[in-house]
Every structure is written in structure tokens, then in C-alpha cells.
Length: 137
Image (tube, rainbow, N blue to C red; front, side, top):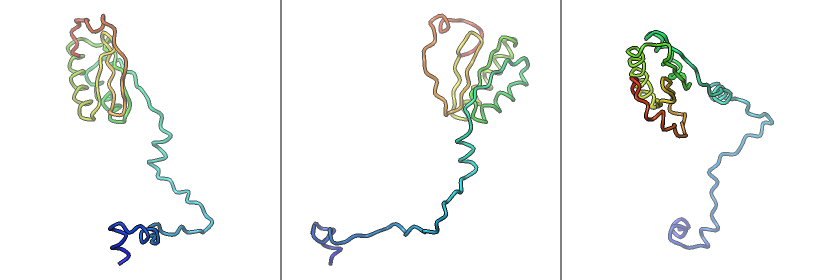
């Protein structure tokens, strides 16, 4: 009957009943110092940005590995011919898409690739936006 009254507005019955859903804490005098290794590793891990100047298409594998490890990567294509640079940019577009990241052009031949936990803010200058180089955006 008390349950019925508490459900349908009898304030006196609702005030009289008290339920404690929490289990009683064990008072052993010892602190629980167990910490997940993954949690501790994530807390102490610094965010990193890796810098690369690829010369060969094969260097793209090392760059993609950095992205998969959660690091942002700045790639400078000044040491690579345009055809291979296009192939690398295409590969990195796919890699960043697969990890829900992003790729942005930050210079004439420089790209920033980020995993999904990075946010890039700011505006590029108009001269960079108007640049008509052969590398794709």
C-alpha cells in the first residue's frame, strides 16, 4: 500500500520510505591503488606532431603509421617530384578518411594530416588559397 501511495502522490508515504541502492563500502583500511595500464599510458602520453620530407613513394607507409598511432603529421613535398607527391597525397587522403581524421594544405607543398582527436583552427592567407600548384587540395 505504501508503494501505491508513493507512486500516486501521497507525500507522507514518499517521505517515510528511503531506499539505499549503494552497497556498503568495505572498510578494510587499504586504499585501492589498482590503475589500468592503458589508462595510465593515455594520461602520460604527450601529443606529438611528426615532420616528414618524403623522397620516395615508399615513405608514405611510415607517414601512415604515425597517423595510425594517433600522431599528427606535417608532410613537406619539396624533395619529391609532383607525380609521386600526388600519389602520396591521395594515399594520405584515404588514410585520414579511414581513421576519421583530416588533411589540410598549410603551405605551397606542405600538408597537415591529423587523426580524429585533433582540431585545426585558423585561416590560411589568400595567396595560399589562390595558389595554382599541381598538388591536389
